[in-house]
Image 1 (cartoon, rainbow, N blue to C red):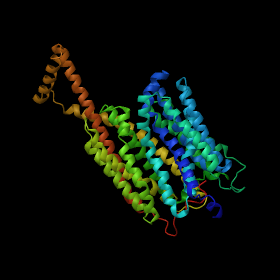
Image 2: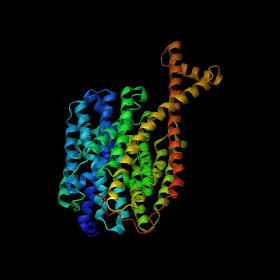
Image 3: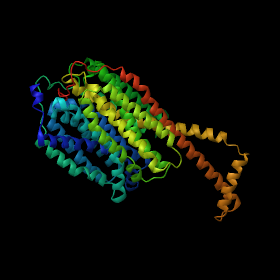
Length: 526
């Protein structure tokens, strides 16, 4: 314990360490969503196809999710401060290179490298913040870290939209450079590394484990990111990579359970709370990134909003999260059980989803979204910290760091699964609803005929001939049917997403807490 106590900071030094870690975590998280609104500009500027430009997002996500499970081990081998500073430098340099890319594949390669640097920032930032606070203030430390993780994805779209509208797309990468330089200097000056024993520093590196992990997770991430665009298993590459991902995961698990010095300690999943926490973290990523993805998509594709308008919609949600995070941290410190807070968050998220299900129309006004999104912010603030502390509450020593790596990876994969499943679901439901609406349209119905005649006369008044006006009227009717089918598809997404969260409530309440003592997150998260 003496070694861990030496990492606790006080006064101004702790404030500087906290700001450094949160800034670096925000760098990584904001970059996962800020690019989305700039894809159209990049596509035109770099002469890329729609499929090629999608790789800008995919490459970053693949690099990100590969390195997260390795973070704990890499910190031990190279020292946490050195590893953290190097990761920030890689991220910053690659941000500059991304902004200067002259063709699409240069940009894709640099985004992959940027993802490798960024993946380390999340878990390591969490570890640094946690160990900088004394045990009795660990709940507040998690609240501060959680603030960055939850708000980050909502900052990306409005920030990206503003930059694209007022500057050029390379500046979404250039803004990382001054923050990255400051983060590197502050890390080298103020961040301290724990001392590791010789036993911890392994001489025999599990290279096969690293390769299997990279191949399995990289293939899985590609399938999730590109599956919908490539028509899933009708595409040969998707089929091959799905098989590679399945075999890779199988052999990786076998390797890690049988090798003497595994790169990822899977045995830690024997802990029941961590297993439940890992599943809930996956759902949190599903809900967080899924809802951050679906609202801008709906408002831009159906309501015709600009990227900046869609992004600004999330500000009330971010404010609600910022206000609630410290409150949740205080409640945890006062002994409120993580299970109760998590269950409350799941119920609130269900309310948000059902509310959105009820308000969606082909012309939903902007102000109608504010209160549901504020409720979303409240729900997410009640989920992140309690789920994290619940997952790690009965772990000890180095198991905490291994558990933190699992939860970080599952949050990212949950987001990828969420976006992939939601995209596919919207597409399939859109066809179902369109067919149903058309089947219920009776061409001989006087009301429908009257509606078509009114549109025909309206187009004729603009100078069209009767036959062209009639054809245009039926095209407008078809567009109206398509739009209504799309709205119904989004409604289904919100309904099923909310139901999924509601179903989890009884399972969360059955989880056992750590009754023996207060959770000690100080032990070897590194």
